[in-house]
Image (cartoon, rainbow, N blue to C red; front, side):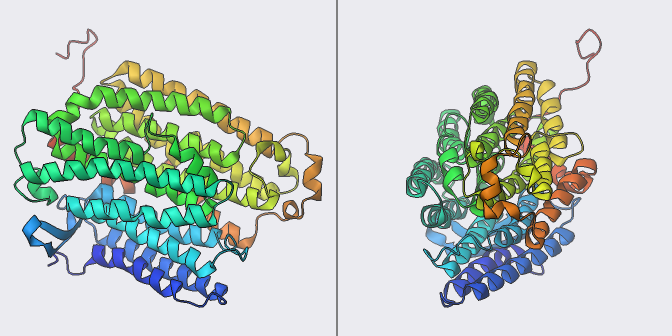
Amino acid sequence: MSDAGFPFLSVLTLAPLAGALVVALLPRRRPELAKQVALLWSVAVLVLGIVMWVAFKADGARFQFRESYKWVPAWGVNFTFAADGIALVMLLLIAVLVPLVILASWHDADTGRRSVPAYFALLLALEGTMIGVFAAADVFLFYVFFEVMLVPMYFLIGSYGGHQRQYAAVKFFLYSLVGGLFMLAAIIGLWAVGGHTLDWQALTNAEIDTTTARWLFLGFFVAFAIKAPFFPFHTWLPDAGGAAPAGAAALLVGVLDKVGTFGILRYCLPLFPEASHYFAPLALTLAVIGVIYAALLAIGQKDLKRLVSYTSIAHFGFIGVGIFAFTTQGGTGAVLYMINHGLATGLLFLVVGMLVARRGSALVSDFGGAGKLVPALAGVFLVAGMASLALPGTAPFVSEFLVLIGAFTVNKPAAVIATAGIILAAAYVLWMIQRTTQGALNPALSNVDGMKKDLSMRETVVVAPLIALILLLGFYPKPVTDVVNPAVQATLSDIGAHDPGPTTASGDGK
């Protein structure tokens, strides 16, 4: 049954999966047709996502578009979908990114080594499974999508990636699978102590003893920390991001990794409020270490794609700080960071992919002065880099500012140390831009045919919407914050967290 007039979430989930099947069945000798069908299908999903965004009432019920269909009644498992403001913005982010990734990946599979229809079918399948993860309101259904979405990404990396693609794909899959096993054990335990149901709404009202809740929290948290990834569970991401095709990498760091931070907000906090408070200092410590550690490693990278991957680990540290600050500003900033990081790092990965495709190499040393040959592409690269380091006027600045403000009010040391990550971000981004597009022209570039072609019309269509969104949300984030704030406040209410009150000059709060 569906509480909404139209089953938005089930259609939004199934449509890309149906599109993947259609594209996969197209003849291998018709690659252009496969690309066109995949693009049109993803645009249709985007249109549906926009309609759902318009239909969502920010001042309405916490969860909207609820649907529930019987699946395994003996286990208390249903196909239940529902979306709050946090899930909604992530669903729209997916719907926006996938058509742009398909367009950016137009020639990524044209080597003749692998099937072009299969490549674009995998992108659509990945879209459908990612939507299912964010739309699920049953814990077991969430787990199914959590695991199934590994499959298309595994093949995108392992079959269509670059150097060491098979090693990176296996490492990605095994890390995620191990995390999934921790979560599966926790789900079984939750079902046993939560009244033999896995419906999210019912579980939030279940009474679970303190010790059991802490163990169950850890089972979920480890799975989500690996997926995010948080330090020290991060080592799979640089390999996967470095080996994946640029479009797949943009979805990997732009959306798929957000399942980890979304899972913490949706499942760890509301289902285990006492455990969330108990483990918050540990989680904050890991997040702060991740900000500094990943930024330092990013500075020393020689491969552009691995460098961008390390920047993402640092950004996830900021998201973790915002979540476990347990303040409205921190929580809203964390969710905004999830969206804005998807836009900014998605753009950065796509632009890096364009540079790598032209040069035939991802090594920083193989560039140098490239802006003299491809000035427009170098300009977009600069914009993407400035957004990545959260320059004021870009969307990530708003989220980073909120995270630090929210954290500072409750944990000044964590906020101060995390702020040092901003300085390091400026170092690795400026170093990356300086060594690739600025300075004296690398003589070897003059002999590379690809470097004689600046930003094409297709590439302009890819980057223009992302730049526009980054600037729009940098100056006017209200449309998103209006949707996100009620969901964040409801999550904080679930764990009994309250924003600290104003203090007097003496700091006594009276």
